[in-house]
Length: 363
Image (tube, rainbow, N blue to C red; front, side, top):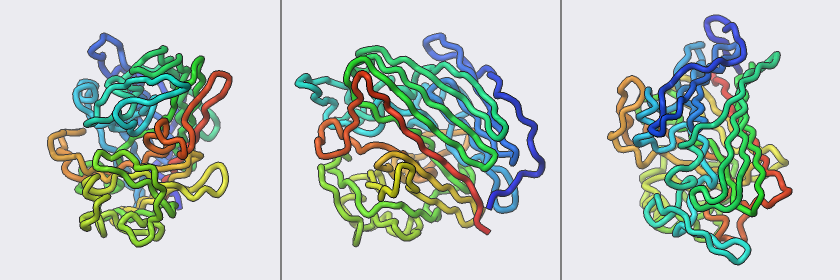
């Protein structure tokens, strides 16, 4: 069931609005995507960040359901990847290094002993070129960025494109494409933190989650996969049946202790190219987020490292577990795990990935 807002929105191709200047002196624009039901996404050229996402509840009321900041300076100063495109390699690479074709490449260790989300200045911290578009039933943006050979330690010049499309069926679609002139790992994803009750309105422990995954990749104490593919059966990571996030999050389980909650990659049950990965329901508003993807995995993160030190939009304090992330992806540390699905892109090949967020309501 899709609810319209109080009135249909007039729509045109998104136009750039100023959103400040980076510490490198680059001007950053913001683009507003609106559909016929009042749903609205505000997106920055900086990092492809989704600053806000207005979604109707069961009564047609619109609320912003993603965490973020009011200023570019806040995103530059200390954002935990709120709303951004992350890469070249989303998630962790063990000990900040990988070996490819006989050569070892050192990377930044920006997450304890490991490399996270592309490094110190990954794709979340660069200004992308943006081309807006409008079709009969959708609006969107084509974001492009050329990552030079050696950027953040990665080999090859990577030509990356991320297309954001907002449809009149309340879908937000992400299409990623990349090519390279040298072999390199690529694992792009979107890193929005959600609270379907509305950002800043308490924790997310009452959200009811279904993950279409019979297995997960257990991690060590630094959150690097051990290489095992383990069944979720009998563990607190079993979300095959809809379960509240808070139902088992504080159980005495080594995997939950390592992540301070959920921060794990789930191996999706693939039923074709585009697969339903997750369904999240928020009971007080009726909002439902369904995620489908071509990716083999999904990182489910329950906002365990939010600790009340960040002030978000309108000065709201983001406390422990005030948001969750559902990052469609290849598996963490795949460059060092030959048994995992490969993330290596070679010259002449094309990296393609699609993820769809579909918003509905449940009465």
